[in-house]
Length: 113
Image 1 (spheres, rainbow, N blue to C red):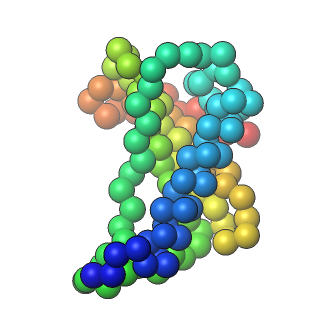
Image 2: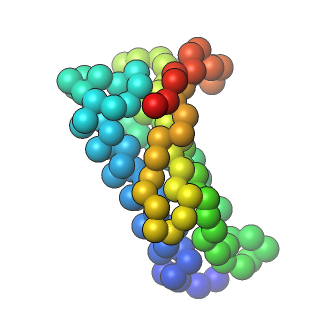
């Protein structure tokens, strides 16, 4: 296995860029179910990204998709956001927003502009 390869670095870079766009959407008040003035401690996680397949590095291909899960500490629901990027030179766009309960069942699907 090659540590720190270009492919792995690109996947990490793209995931970080998607999270940065998610934060910008929050700061501008453009995330459904997440008011701009909402404050409090939150836990943000992202779905795992496969970097190895059959002991070989996975090459990054587009379109890319990253799903983030945000839980406000003390709450039992999770706000979920999927962002997509159509090509290497395009920007990340919010594609889907939904809320799930503690059992993972969808409570509400939010329209995305």
